[in-house]
Image 1 (cartoon, rainbow, N blue to C red):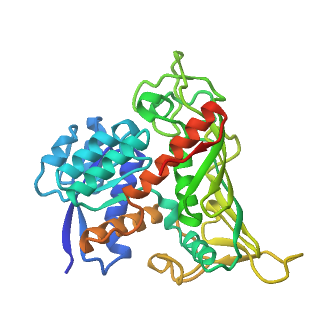
Image 2 (tube, rainbow, N blue to C red; image 1 turned 45 degrees about the horizontal axis):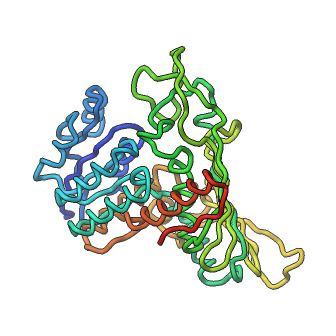
Image 3 (tube, one colour; image 1 turned 90 degrees about the vertical axis):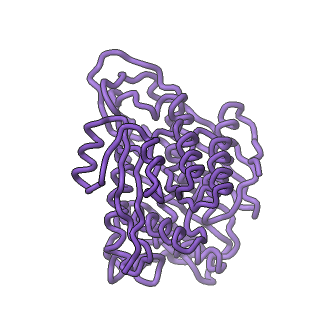
Length: 385
């Protein structure tokens, strides 16, 4: 019988609830797991949300003070899903309390914050996980295997795009994501952090970058309560948007590939339009989040007029078999968070890091810092190692 792992969740917005669901579902898909998460305590500044979370998911208790979670000696692991500006303080405190840490990206408002959390995790000897969920997609794992095996030849260039409309409405509430004090960068931290991790995961390190960014909706109405991704505000009082709505970047990888990354949070007509295309000297592979279980693959020796085919990933790829019995049956976004939770829990059980960790967050954050710096100056910028 599996040993219970008592967990806490700090921050109960959309992502806090997603983590809670992932913990609850883990045993369904990973019945052989050595540890089974048990929801111990949830914390959020909104008392009503706390109470609702405890009732819905069966947390033993709820609190409005996140420090209560760390003070509980029975809690062994903690999810941190708060605004970016709190990642460093809470993430470091979780590690220093000797508790394992699952924290959402981008882990702070810059590389210094991510470094501080990573240092605390290393010093405490605890395990960590970071919410780079797209690397958990079985199709992305299959694409990585193809690239690593040289099936498309030497990678020459690639494109990563992350377009969405969650902030496209001019009455979208001026929540923390639009304020530099609380969110740091805008779409760079929110979406390009995922793109940066995909570049590292599929193609390796980036040496330098040149970027451009823009704010297309300069003012938004102030919210009258907690404001999530898609919240609209009826208030007439406007406030300034302090970070970018859009960014485009050209990167040079250590291995000589050219990569473009483009992202927008105000793209009317795009709903979670995320994907990656990788092209090599003998072929290409592409993935679209909205067709999660498919790859567009071109391989062979013809070069000219070489056909592209659709490959449906299945039980032989990544963790697909944990969720579906055969190719062509789609997985969901929430499934990716269950994979993430399972890898976090397995790391705790084995003492060996599995999946994305805070070290990956540091690499991503250093690339994000370089993108943000280049967008300010318009100059090529080296990525700190």
